[in-house]
Image (cartoon, rainbow over all chains, first blue to last red; front, side, top):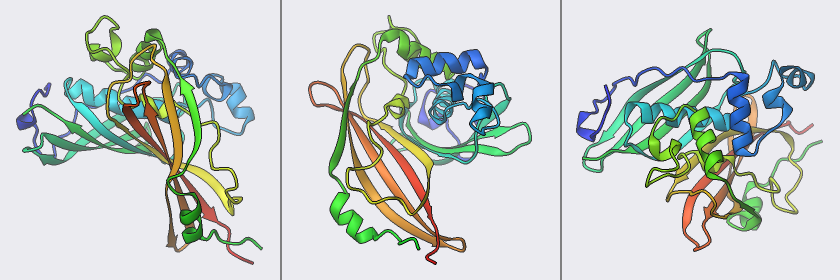
Length: 137
Length: 150
């Protein structure tokens, strides 16, 4: 269901799950655009030489996934704040799912608070975030 | 022996004082790639012809200061790790517009748990357009797990 107005949002509702594109090609596209190009993000072998489990999805890209997920659910949502904790690495070419749940609604102000998690195939939370968004009345 | 950071002294000396300034500029194609690779579908972030075309809301976190901490800041008594990032967009970031990013230490605090004391440093980058309009705040939290004094 696409959300257009704050009155359509229910406390505790789960946002549709989003499976982000963590492929090497897509991460390369992102880091070039962000001016963050570097082998730890774009080359598995180079990342392993640094002691990492593989090339990393930058934390700022995971944060971008969270915002994209919110806009897929509520295209007109204005994001006022996203606070993200990077608990563990997100690895390029591995599958992740992003879940979100509405944890607070201020209908008068049109504000909604959402908890968001990025988990891997084992169900381990790698990134946790909280977003505050504003929706039309 | 490693000495703990004196939080009150650090706050007095370093808080709310700009220590870095950088200028950035991004093209429309870069903003589209940034948004699209994150999975954005909203045309205001993916279509440069859209009347409200702008950078996606978390974009400001990709801007990096020239230095992580102010000049003269004491050596960290432990391993500094990225504990998270927060971003608060205030006004649209547009392509081809120079962005001035100023950084200051916004907060310094400590938490003590079973494993010892952890000190948190919050660096805030404020991003302005050439007219001086605040476009976004981007906070980076560094946590230092202090080594116990010998």
